[in-house]
Amino acid sequence: MPRPLAAVFDLDGTLVDNMTFHGDAWLRAARRLGSGATRHQFEKVWAGKKADEIFTMLLGRPLAAEEAARLEQEKEADYRALYGPHLAPMPGLLAFLDRLAAAGVRLAVATAAPRGNRELVLGGLDLFRRFEVVVGTEDVTRGKPAPDLFLAAARRLGVEGGRCLAFEDAVNGVRAARAAGMETVGVLTAEPAEALAAAGAAWLVADYTALPPALEALLFGEPAPPLERVRIQLPDGRRLTYYPFPGGEG
Image (cartoon, rainbow, N blue to C red; front, side):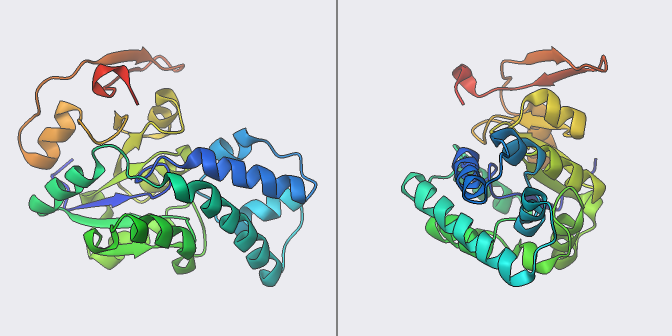
């Protein structure tokens, strides 16, 4: 891959480690609606989809726009009440964004999070000023794994998808970024390394405190000091190397 001109970040599970709180809020919404949907479905299968798409699957029928909007508002208000007291950036994120900006890499967010959730995270952590472009579900027709959000971010930046590097924590998100022509860094907050690698992630990180040497060199021109490597074998026989947080945390 040539040196990226832009980095496009997902929000939930990528800028902040909040997916457990989303899962809690979705489970509460499902129980209110009499659905037996599981945390696995919300956090693994449906992650990255638009809320109206998820409610349609929960209820097994199409929803009028007004009903979908009401259900989404209830669920997201519950999520914000649960997560708000725990709001914090991913470890190393702020310094990493500073390094990217200093290197001339343009920054964008492409997220299925609704406006109120974006305000909570990007406003609450003073991140709006760091991102040139923020794309949300109101800007596209389809959520992830369709590439629409990432394509919209690249279009607004005026950068080809192949010169953008995406950061994603969900399988659907990695698939969406790859479908948009972007190489992808998988963030290991919600999914196992094997799942993100199988979806197409080229690099894997636990957080932003340290990068794999090859990714460091791609972005900044010279590798960081060597990190401890973990090697795993995927079900299809491929071998994968990733670099966990130093000391084994995260």
